[in-house]
Amino acid sequence: MLRLYDTQTREVRDFAPLEEGKAGLYVCGLTVQSEPHVGHVRSAVNFDVLQRWLRHEGYEVTFIRNTTDIDDKILVKAAEQGRPWYNLAYAMKRELDRAYEALNVAPPTYEPAATGHIPEMVELIGQLIGKGHAYPADDGSGDVYFDVRSWPSYGELTHQKIDDMEAAEDADPRGKRDPRDFALWKGWKKASEPETAAWPSPWGPGRPGWHIECSAMAGKYLGTAFDIHGGGVDLRFPHHENEQAQSRAAGHQFASYWMHNAWITTSGEKMSKSLGNSLLIPAVLERVRGIELRYYLVAAHYRSHVEFSFEALDEAAAAFQRIENFLDRAGSGAAGELPEAFVAAMDDDLGTPAAVAVLHDAVREGNRQLAAGEDAGATAGQVRAMLDVLGLDPEDPAWPSSGGADAQLTGAVDALVAGLLGQRQAAREAKDFATADAIRDQIKAAGIEVEDTPAGPKWSLA
RNA sequence: GGUGGGUUGGCCGAGAGGCGAGGCAACGGACUGCAAAUCCGUUUACACGGGUUCAAAUCCCGUACCCACCUCCA
Image 1 (cartoon, rainbow, N blue to C red):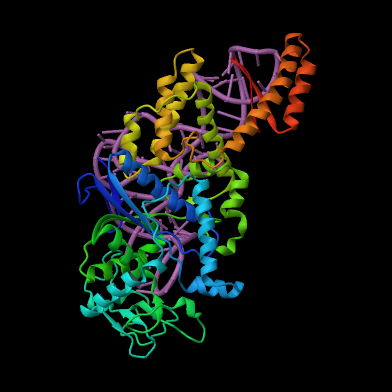
Image 2 (image 1 turned 60 degrees about the vertical axis):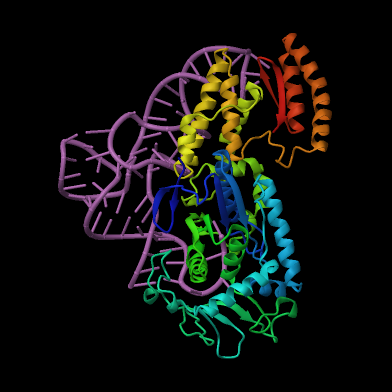
């Protein structure tokens, strides 16, 4: 029985889907305004593991992860860079896809973009106005606001009272009835905003506010009631609080469970653009492989704060290589059954740390079997099965490096190294270890390490 | 001011009343021409002060420090 921590009720609850055997999942993706960093990718990996686990448990999963491709920051950055906002958003979207692919984040069922759903948002805003929960600003700005005072349960997700909330420091009332009212629609500011960033609406040209897109798209693809809504902790408020308020005010039941992943920080602080380039995905992938970075992210619980360090990342890579070494030695076979302890760990609010511990236990047992000359095939099968569920199976063709050119290259290197290793073996048999070691050093200088195993020498890239 | 999270061994990172999660590192032993890999073994913990309990890292009270969110940050 899968149990999940629900942010709203603040407890781990049995997962009871609205419809037997099906799971509807909506996750807030990114605002595509800058290159993705490790923190962004953590969220994607966490929810990818959820998706995989739900599927493994037999659920038919509909997974929607949106892309916010129009917002203030995109407009500001694009203007600074002197390029159209849609070009910036599209370029960053492509970067993000590359990062997802590098980490074997499986694509969702669909990835809707905000700009593709303006009519749905306009319709929803119209409904809210009709029900008295939203109003066009009376200052002629063309803005439309959600009326938080009109919705008695506003604050229910994060357990806050409206009167305890700090009004934004730079609160510009702009025709708001209450400073906490938030924008559903933002009137086009002709003087400072490009015409391409404005869409027609009953309240004049403009663009959507941030929160309304998720309400509209979740409703379109998952219906007015769905199972799980996820995102990063920072989104709890205001984003998710507002989403829930506007959706419920429009008569939707909305999400049954709210899941939020914790932060990755560096030097004790949350990641942001100001921290430099070192944690952008391409830079991190110069240090470790994508599968190793994914292991690092999966080995921590999704609700635990992670303090990023390259040392910890290297340790994770070493730990993962131990698993790979075992599979290498045991020979790859079909994936077997998952150990009970692994299933129990995953069912307990996606307890990946405990699940990874089970994985390592199996690896140790398998290595023991190999050392004792026993058959480790079944153990290897279990290891494969566990890795598969976590998206960490090295043999998964979804990993980017397993292309045809690579295979050809590997074959070529193998042939060359084999010749040298033959010479080395001859020297070893003649007890000419100086020559043997010289050949090994020569191979090593080319970036290839040689290990002697009972089955003969084996090479790998250093 | 409001809401929430955290402080675990040399390091990373689980656990949430009673058997030392797991990994990395280190040390000893086995195997190996050497190395690597692997196996066996060893070592170091629960921020601080009280309390509850037969038993507390875990529950309660207090203290210190850190962090996140409070209207467009994963």
